[in-house]
Image (cartoon, rainbow, N blue to C red; front, side, top):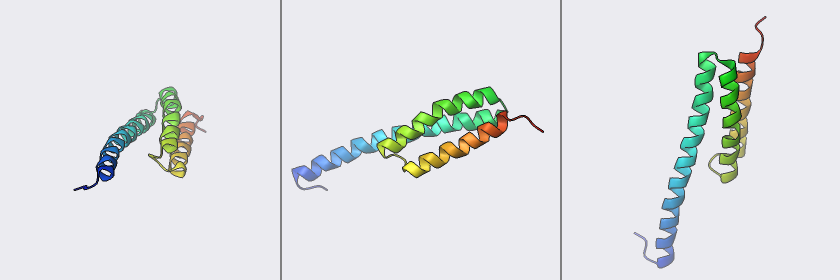
Length: 91
């Protein structure tokens, strides 16, 4: 248990920050899941729409420190690749 007042305050701040980060992480996962579900259903237009919504969420999570910048970039890149493959004409 924290003894000093500054340690108690730090504990409160950590708890608040943890809740905020959990909410942000959950939000990112929801957006990514929507893209993946659209890709799985084969609906190219819905997948593109969902991807365009997920992209800024991933960037925001990276900016806020919830995700590492490279992780967010990798996720965006891989989703973009899958969405593009879905909308490409089959030859």
